[in-house]
Amino acid sequence: MAHHSPVNPESSGHQPRAIIIGGSLSGLFVGTLLRQIGWKVDIYERSTGDFDSRGGGIVLQPEVLEVFRRIGINKHRKAWGVPSMDRVVLDRGGNIRSRRYAPQIQTSWPLIYGALKSAFDMKHYHQDKTLTHVEQDDGLRHVTAYFEDGSEASGDLLVGADGGNSQVRSQIWPSQLPGYAGYLAWRGLLPESAMTNSMRSELHGNFGFANNVGSHILGYLVPGAGNSIWPEERLYNWVWYRVASATLLEQVMLDRDGRQRAYSVPEGRLAARWRDYLHKEAGSLLPPQFQEIVRATDAPFVQAVRDLAVDKMVTGRVLILGDAASIPRPHTAASTLKAAANALSLADALQANTTDIDAALASWEPRQVAFGKQLLMQGMRTGKLLMFHQA
Image (cartoon, rainbow, N blue to C red):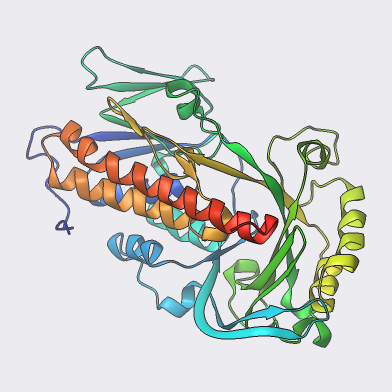
């Protein structure tokens, strides 16, 4: 493991500079870690607003806690989320089919995002910056990003941390595109205080599951408004995987305003007919507890489950990481983990090769590509089993 105290960035006469495209979790993981080892870092994010309202639960992984440790965010582990005790599988009637003691902590996207932003110098976080293209000099030692508003930014390294539909990836590796896995993830967040006793039966405080033909649902408690982890202030996060043809996918992605979306419809934007559809389907496929939870959720949202694992993550001084490089299926609980792991190992490699960025990238890339492919295969195997009952 590399030594993690900050290097003297002036020791080589030049403080290296990173341009990061994408200001979500991947961009903030890598941005905070590179600053910690003495780099100048600027993050360029295309959205204009704050991401804080984005819902969704995340299983808290050791890699995320390691990023927090290195960048000096020291809270007690319990403050990062909500514990669950047992993994409980319900049958169609709502009775326990299996129970296994497996304590873990579930956190939320806004909590991690807010913590990372608090550790980053926001003078260097630029919003409303849509990338148009990237150029490298002839010696591949310098890279420049060009933006829609006519501005540009140059540095020693450009990191594409711009998600599953990465602009950086589409320019450098245009043939590397995510593929649809054949099923959707319907999602919802229900205030814990709105959960009735019958909803709580066997699910509250546990990590709950239920399977049916072409259907797999799970749920657990996550931090609530203002990242509160206090009882009755939390949210119940559920994810319901359903097999869906490409035609159905296209219909679901037509949002309430008539806008055709590619792979996800966020909270509050789903066309009204799909709530009725979910309620009906819940009645025929889910145990009573999950039926009630789905029907009580005001604003469900949805994402297509997609597959991606690139063969290359580096060209010259441009690299991609996080979901820009590989999209693990949600069953792996590894999307946030992988973004953090990519960023941690990049910081280690750059710190071990302070005078040779190219050598650092060459040592970093192979293992990260292999990790992405490993997670892809793991997710595909799990999905086949859960959704299509194929070993």
